[in-house]
Length: 254
Image (cartoon, rainbow, N blue to C red):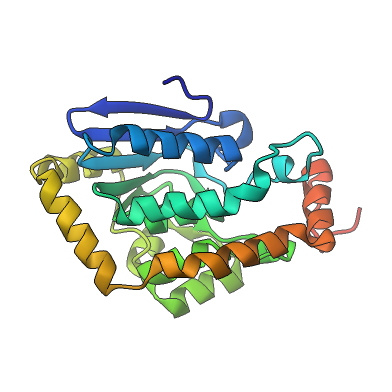
């Protein structure tokens, strides 16, 4: 299948999914979410490993604000929170080992992809942040996955401070499982061993792990409801529109 927002290739038993919206800083829109779902479905039976990546400069910068505020934007936008949460669930619980290959900037919903993956690998260029509170929002759908990965207090701190952290710091916090000068070499070392695992063993193990850990599926309803409330608030939409059209943050005057 030809995709508009991602690049997909299967090499041996490894499926590589790369965000490909350079004109929009690899932000998340309905089309991107749908195409990621399609790619996972296409290779669910054949892939033992799924690698999610962005560009060398930008992994993913979260929601596409221009699309959210545009009258001609993606009309599936109302369904995006639910579909996006389901996508992260598939990365967290699906019958394959998922790896986030993190380079450059990662923000907001981009953190959701990192936190949902089984393994997150980064390089020294990585800068990770949750900027939502700056716009009167909060990372409602991200938090269940982020808390699952690094614990409440660290996720709480990242949400409140909105401050970017380095790849090295993210590794110390457990958001990344490894951070080196070359994430490509780090990824290849992991793939050498992960390729040896059987599909049945991965499927069985992940099904078991997801029965004995935080019930991410049960947290979907409150997360999606909160996200929809935030993005339907007129004040929040005004702040987002100001930023998209004029590059002005909510606390700045025109």
